[in-house]
Image (cartoon, rainbow, N blue to C red; front, side, top):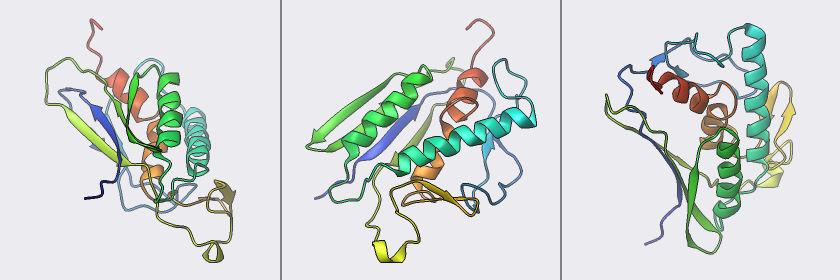
Amino acid sequence: MRRTPLLALLVATACARPPQAIAPPQPGLFGPSSHPVLLPPRFGEPGLPRTDAEWRGVGREAAALLSQYVAINTTNPPGNELKTAEWLKAVLAREGITAQIFDPGPGKANLYARLAGDGSARPLILLNHMDVVLATPEYWKVDPFAGTVQDGYLWGRGALDMKRRWAPASGRGGWWSITRNWCRTPSS
């Protein structure tokens, strides 16, 4: 039986307050989406973006990360998950998040990262796959692995799939940053 490697991000946030949905995203670099953006309700936390300009900076940073991520050709087969997992581990490390890579075979990999909460609520597990399906070049206006911004959209294989859902979570002001601050207790 063939297994597809997953980017397994276990987030044991154990926070007492569930995230709440904010207004649905508008079309932009990440394209139209039917998925609400989940953010915790406490926006006044130290170190988090507060102004529109700061949030635009977060958006530019997320778009840059997505562009880099899309540029890693993870077509399965073979998948190239190990190269991707190493890149994701480095991105998480810049945010102070320790991650481990499990290598089940040549070029294959799983990534595991954990954010500990204070134990006051149930853990949350987020899973994501790193591979994409074949991108037939004649069906693309741009190189599917260039992460090109054109006509106000970021183009590339995976840009509207799991890669898109991961990139905005990373970096300053992203889900990892927000969750880490949000789940802190006054004593931490």
